[in-house]
Every structure is written in structure tokens, then in C-alpha cells.
Image (cartoon, rainbow, N blue to C red; front, side, top):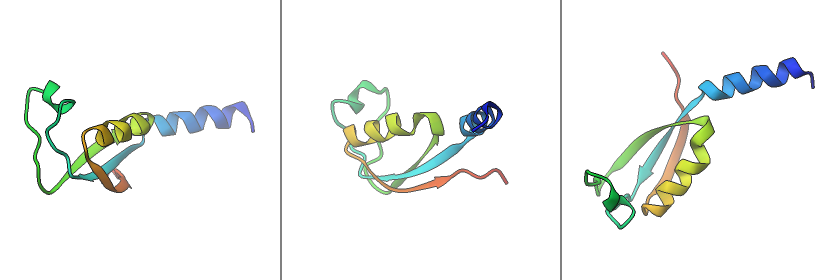
Length: 76
């Protein structure tokens, strides 16, 4: 691959955002550090930049949530 194609692909990935649909978030010792309570029912939608997807998945798991869907955020 050429250097130019590598540089181009990293700049596009930096601007990509995904929407996680999460269920089952609950208040626990990790979420007690927040200044606000979590909703305990229904789905929560979280916008996540491509560069932080893995970190956000781990955080959701620690909070007792389950990711039921991931979709790219499309600008309309």
C-alpha cells in the first residue's frame, strides 16, 4: 500500500462515529462515581467515535449493560 492511502484511511476513520444501542445499564459501584443516576429500563443510545469503540464496550460491560446494536452515525 502507498503511504498516501494509509494517511487517507486514518483521517476518515478519525471522523467516523457509531451509535451503540445499550440495554441493562444499572447503578453499581462504577456508576456511583457519576453525579447522576442511570436509567434502569429501556434502551440507551450512545454516540462513540471509532477510536474509542473498544474502550466504550469495556465500560458498558463494567456497568452491567449489553450492547444490542451498533450502527454507523450517518449525517443527513
